[in-house]
Image (cartoon, rainbow, N blue to C red):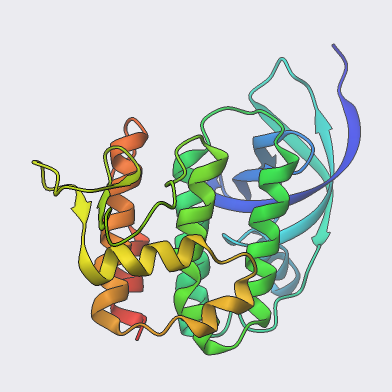
Length: 248
């Protein structure tokens, strides 16, 4: 089957050096879902080569012209350029840490090269909001993203918090009346805050949810546990320890 050229947006997830001058780049594309690309000659010495390689850092949003052949695992890119130039995500320490968390969480969830434009648009919009949002929104953004992302993979937490159902059972993904007999649950303030986060429809609303460092850290850890309970071989997020220190 001959390769065909296609225009697509793409979100860079992971980059690995290949040979002397090339990269193998994992990109979540709008048109084809999760794909791997061989990009030749972008690590050549000199300012031009270095600048081209910078386009493939995790979190970058690119406009691409790609060859696509469903019979091969490693595709090729013909043209690439910035699809969006970040104002703060790549330079602000907090936003960069949040962006790397979002990208890693998304990467751990994606398993098959299937097109999912709704998920792609959600992920891209999340990074755009993160770049433009005030600090109070950025601080809560990883919590919002983690709760929303789960819905795309079929295990969104059901928002049923009430005084009669005050415990969030992380194994079942729902609020329950009695404390579970296993340790995977949230209660009291953390269960209530999660219910508030589940009600958020637009990222700007996150500024209204006031949390301190200890609460964010506990919730991030609980949500990672939630993913590990619902996705086989999920593992541990490498970005979480950094993020848990940076977020205030």
